[in-house]
Length: 441
Image (tube, rainbow, N blue to C red; front, side, top):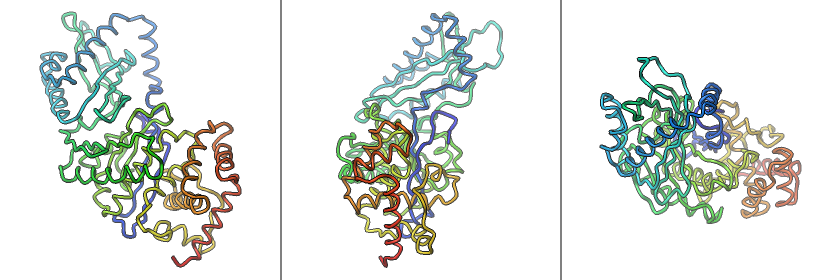
């Protein structure tokens, strides 16, 4: 599902059964930002091509110098310097820029840079003909101290105007789209955990509770997936569902049962970036302590496994592995974790195959079953071969390179790590389902 902003949703999550966990149900999403930096919209491409072919080097350099001054002002928390990059007559824009800087006061920035991606990126509203303006798509790249060795990027659409030979920021609202950041929505409160950073617009006690769960989740995840993933998390806690939707560029109504979203760029080359976990406040608040623990551990697993998750990694494996890790040590039984699935199996309705990726989409019918089947598939691996083999299988799928397609990659990885192919593994998984459905525990 494309968000229309910067990313393609490629993963689903787990489904928590309501029994004893609070809330009706929750999902999370894993978002692949690799497509983000990828391709601008078609109209932007045509504008950018025109600009690039015109050799407008002086304009580009002048605007980039302005952006460099703005970046330096943000890092120095220098409100006067930031105001000097905006026309004196544009008081509303100056006020909004000052508010943004104030909202960032607690955020521990290690880096803040702007880079022009395209000039003439969108059509501008008409103004007096003597006014020289340029519409640009700009990339913001920022780093959080102690958490990002590689920058997190966001897209902005900005209009620049030339006054007295100087380029200034004329508007940040001439073009819809772009990425909303937490500090665009209000003053950010920061809570530092032992191995996490929580940035939020909620009360201090709520943010501290999220940090406590995140700190507990990190060693729990490392106990399964090893210590080579950075062992730190960054969590964003907006105040309401509308803010949650704005941060992700989605309709919040479609996420009314989704507790959290993990955004990330896949593959080992992205290991220097600490991906963000965004908490959906309404769903989070409906969960009890156990539910929040499972959610946070599940999300942290996505952060830990992101470097060995690829486009061809099946969602039953990525989501099943995250749920397997999330439920470890909770004492929940298969009947409590997969109630709908085992009830169907007991009634003779046994799934013929592992769930395909589309089964995890939010609008798919039988969504709970897909998540339950995914958890149970990973349970089968662990029950028959041990937990280290689940970790090895996950890495082996990524290592195949995806040649031949997803099924071929999974089949090869299964043979390498478990000694059985996809067809045989599916049959064993179905046998395990039948045994669990017959069990009284």
